[in-house]
Image 1 (tube, one colour):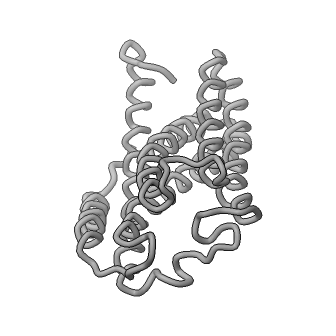
Image 2 (cartoon, helix red, strand yellow):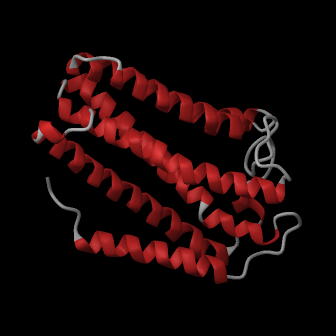
Length: 227
């Protein structure tokens, strides 16, 4: 397996450090309710983009497994799906923190996007329960790949479609203007876009490392945890 180039790692670290540090220093619009919490845009949204990026990687490999029946594709599905759950944790925590300061509560069940995120994470948890419950590797890969495609489609519906069709507190959903429509000025863009790229590069780096761990576990079965 080819290692990720040092230049890739250095660029990832530089983009993340830049977004972390400059994100706290850059001047932001003085908006009612949001105030300084708008800086969370530099962290919360890029993490969700990274999660959806990994979900797309998992779905892509699921399609190729079903077409080619090569188990290496399902190993990619498994690794990318773990990354979906991994990035869902900071995504939820930063979102709940933002909600507490702007909406006055850590969680509200009247918000379709929050509920959609929770449902999406639950579906990916079901994916792992499904693959752990099947012993035959080919049957596991076939059922898991098919379910993973379903998981990705449902995530897109829950996160990207339904909140736009119903009443929602989130910017860009339920009739609310998106950040870019009224307050994502050029100063914030100089942090936001590098942050998105940096977090997605980090997601792929972690994904690559996890694939190597799974490969080592397969090569040395006595030290294997599970797959």
